[in-house]
Image (cartoon, rainbow, N blue to C red; front, side):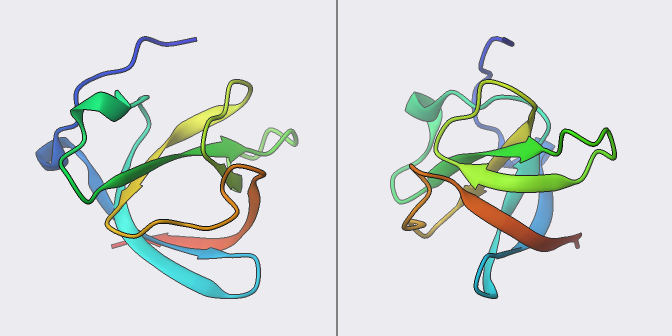
Length: 94
């Protein structure tokens, strides 16, 4: 497991993610693990898991991912259901 890094918005990419049920969330993405303690107030971090198929697609958003960690998604809104994991239907980098 990689060592978490400090949150730095300037080093992250804009991304929009559509989760199971078609709900869209806009935020920032990095392939690194973000130290949750370094987030500014009102920001929430979630891990993205890549699929087991080796295709490098994001398949799940979860509060914490240990295996197949693809990156960290930071948003200004809380995402209900992230503790159990939510299927990623689609995403686009902006």
